[in-house]
Image (cartoon, rainbow, N blue to C red; front, side):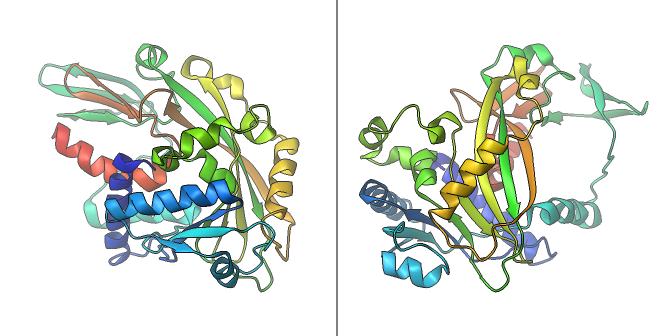
Length: 329
């Protein structure tokens, strides 16, 4: 993430780790790494390492040989070096979301109403009223509406007039590797060329200008990441397709096999895995802004619309929420 959002990410790390100390939410502190595939990407890693030093954020440049020793199966003909982030963690995404909710319910008094839709929200006098689909009415001093990519139910005009867009991503889950262990999150050359943290590097504009504009990686906004789960399975992703908030449904729900094939082919250039059999493939959808970091709008001083955090939600949202709540309370 860029320098501003790195601060939110660092706060998120602090929050996740503090919860883990009291309640297991599946945190594993095993770091993350970017692997460069050529000299341009290696230059960006070196420049980002310098920026990290300025921000007092730990990172460590690795030689190609050090990367090959750390990451079993990494191809020597791909790797030119790496940048390792020792403080970073991984969560089991399908587990963590439920355990965090369970922690909030048990220890923080959260009232959670699954399968209930908020259908109306308005300010009446000095308070807010929220009507739910099951007929209940809730009252509060202030209301936060964090609706992700759901733009049609509450305040659709505000979303339609914004620069919000929906992003549909596509990912794969590979069957467990029999004995191969790949620690942490592995991000690769396409990640380096895509992620906004590198846009602050001095060489970034010139390097991006030389890229082939009509490549499939560009067309589908692909970057290749690997993350191994506790059971040995490997998450592999991901592609990105976009549509304006007013046309989000045009993205559909179909899984494109040509995108999956492209990701698998690219991934095979990076790692020699023991098992390439696909267990699952799925799509996900989130919202992001075209020209800003996040969408914020306040209705009548008390109803706060907040969405469009993009692909950095799991990493940055806890830290951002902590700061944002200080602004509105």
